[in-house]
Image 1 (cartoon, rainbow, N blue to C red):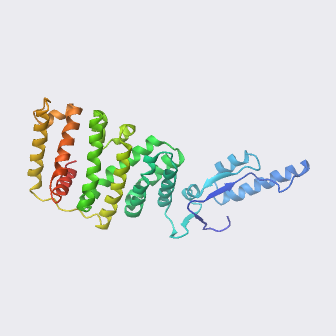
Image 2: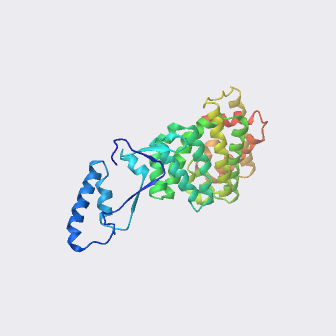
Length: 309
């Protein structure tokens, strides 16, 4: 504790315990031991150790340890974090790494599959990491609040994906879009209309337990590739040609005609806003039509669609 600058591995724990003798002492020495305890506490406090840590520990048994993550002490500006391979580590990156580790230990295969996306974001998107690391760390690592974690993850994806879709290679974008359509088709076949609309609108966390977790895992894998592909292109948007809007409008009209042929009372796209069943069916039909297009046309339509939302 003596140096002005202290360094510790980002993922280590510090153990704090109450002042105690090495061996059993007669009662006549207890007052002296208590005095030494006060001195040691003051020594630590003068070097920045929070009183809250010491007060909690001094109420414990002498042979108990209170473990405090290095990240907690770094948040208090008491230590500098390092990685044994990469050297100095920014606090937000250490938090993000802790989230990755904690997510891998969750007894839920769907959540575990999100780790590949977290790693891809850490390696490619420093702004996202710095913006969301503390919030995500608190929700997953400290509070273990799965619902809040899902909401934060959804906010991250909502911010990250539009740029990734605009920049990624055509083939990677196409596979990601297909994974989306597979989820919509699953929800449509299950007649989960509200969940389908939540998913389409980017509010998947509201119906997370209803979604196909097999498709979620595939979607996470495709997002990982999407992020790496966009980063390789330095997140440079690809142009959307002028002809694409006319082509998209034709596919939209065809999808609405399909609904009418199925007996739904739909006269225009505005009528879909109050009918979740019709909207889900329409979106599946429209997206499927995009997938069926030529491999050079479909990615352009997907980017146009991304720009509209």
